[in-house]
Length: 397
Ligand SMILES: [Zn+2]
Image 1 (cartoon, rainbow, N blue to C red):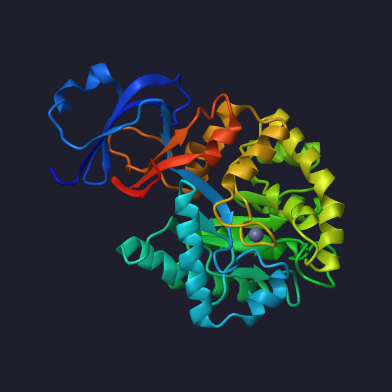
Image 2 (cartoon, helix red, strand yellow):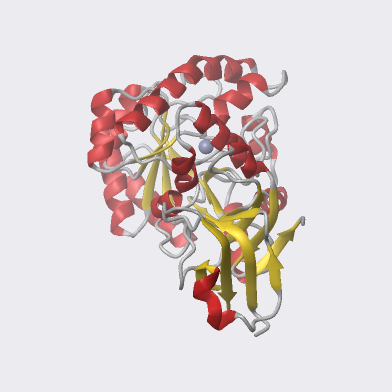
């Protein structure tokens, strides 16, 4: 019985899009949810010890940030910082970032571009219990064209053959997702944010090889042409998606292709402080307004949207998902959908069927919030308790 945790009295949103259950009971045993629902249904568990009194708080599934960079810490100059890191520093950064995320109620993150093998080492350390932090899925490194965006931390690919080989090698290294840099980016000097990169045949080969190996394919894509090429190639998600057109959104809905907008990224660079390089500030201002418009349009037309922050980029600190959710709300997303995008829907994008909702048999990752996130988006920033794998890992009650 020592690995049993009972939480009583909270308002429960179990992540399945159903109505709230007041004065709910959740029983977790050996890391899994045994029961989550009305108190009346939990009679068999009455004798269990160690009940957490959660009255007045809201219980939701553990949050998921589908786009982070654990090796980066929000330094103003992303490129210079990443290039200066030793392997040990990169590992230390990952550990610190994963803990920051956990403290914010984020029990799972997906890293889309690290330095060397630091992120996959952190993922293994977390899984073994040696590292206290969010569960980590990772692309290990990014794939980019020679001299392309993020080349300073990525593998540079110039042919279909190189693409296939690189994906096989990342798979062997422990990647669960492949990150394709399909356009230029804000944080690399000398490259337009909107310019396209990989030719269609390389994108198609990449997606085919990734899927053959059971990996997801995520495309960093800002400009319209690069987005269209990536969607056409069948990637699982468009990251950033600043310049979306209606025909491309239609294709995304049909495929389906997810959108992970990371509204925080350009907003933080443009407003976070005055030490970010001028090229990054200029390019952020160039894409920001279009990105908000694209997000709103994608939302209105019914695109699948998962939450992600791009944490680690300038002034965009780990654990900042609550800010992203606020920006998504300001851009038109309803509060019920926001909860889904940060829990069940993000889990679906990540291919993790046993997290994202609180149902019997699923992994017991959950958060107690002060306040109700379905009436106040600010509640995500008020984390009282975090439980991961059925164990209390953060307690601020
Ligand atoms: Zn990113």
